Length: 264
Image (tube, rainbow, N blue to C red; front, top):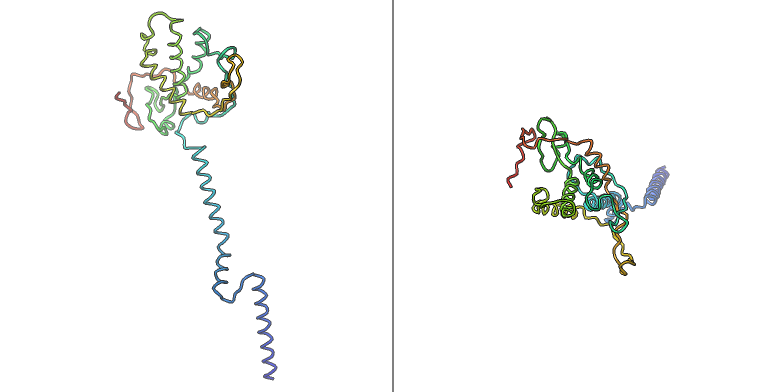
C-alpha cells in the first residue's frame, strides 16, 4: 500500500514537473533561476517601454526642429486672422511688362498709390492692444480703443515719398526740400526702413537666369511666380478697422499702463 501511494505521488510530481517544463518552453523563458534568465526576463519586460521612450524623444526633437525653422513664435498682430497666401507672378517692370504704379506721376497713377495705403491707420480694441509686444496709445475720445499702423502700409507710404522725390523735377516746381515729407532726412529714414523690411522678409524665391537677346547675355528674369501674403485680404482688414481721423495732439490716460513717451 505504501509502495502504491509512493508511486502515485511520484506520478503526480512527474506530471506537474512536465506541465511546468511545457509552460516554460511556451513562454520562451528559462525559469530555472539562473542570472542570465533573470536578465532576459527583465529585458523583454522593459523593451516596449524603452522603444516608446526613444520614439517619443525623437518625435519631440523633430517637432522642435521643424517649429524653430519653419514656424517660429511670431510677434502678435491683430491682423493675423487676415493672413492667407497666394501665388503671384511678378511684373518685370521694364519694356512692355509694367505695372499701374509705374511712370511719371499723374492723377491716375497717384490714385493707384493712394489706394495702396489709404486705410493704413487702424483702430483696435484694448484686448488686442494688451497683447502687443510694443505698447501703443489709446485713441482720444474713443475709450477702449487704440491706434496702430501695420508695417506694410508704413513701408508703402515711405516708398511713395521716394517716388515723388524721384520724379519731382518732371512734375513739380521749387525745391522738394521745402516739403517736410520729401526732405532728404525723411527719405533717408524711408530708404533704411524699406531696407530693414526687405531683409526681414528675405524673399528666397529663386530667379532664373535666361538669355536676353536684346542684351546678348544671360540675365535674371524677375517676372516669375512668388508665394505671397494676400495683400488685398490685409488691406480689407485695414479697411474694416480704419481709425479715421485721430487727434494726435491730445494725450489721454492709458488703463494698460504708463503712457508711451519717446525722447528723441
